[in-house]
Image (cartoon, rainbow, N blue to C red):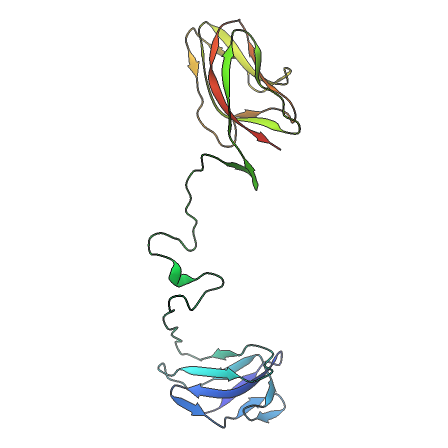
Length: 224
């Protein structure tokens, strides 16, 4: 058989070529400019080995000073990859054999909610909590330098008919005027992206159309 060298991009030294249980020595290497013997330096990046059966195993051993990997191409043949032994072979940096069945995924990421952290891009934010207890318009969360107050959830209950408006820094409306009846509550539910947020470095306050008692709570994060 003939072992053919093609592609003039890389150089490699081939000591032995093993076909199944047969070690072929010497072997003729056909490359640019002429033929070469084993252990000779050749200019190539692809080593084409032909006329193999599907049961043949091909092994190419690189010699001292090899400067590039050798690629083996089997025309119209199926190359079978043997089993990966536990703890001895990796794909990239992943030890495939160490992944227990049913507990880890490749190609997907399984996750569960983290009650301690919310991410804004790659920035980890810690959820914070505040109490709502007002008898008139007032502040809910004090200003934080260089941070926006982003409300992710809240609940409130009024003991009289009124309107409520969330504001940034006592001036900029974050919501419209929301009308509530006596003993009516309001809770929009959790939204990790935030229902609304203040301007950077500004407080969060609540404006009442009519002074009534308001009780409740809110969750928020401080966003850079």
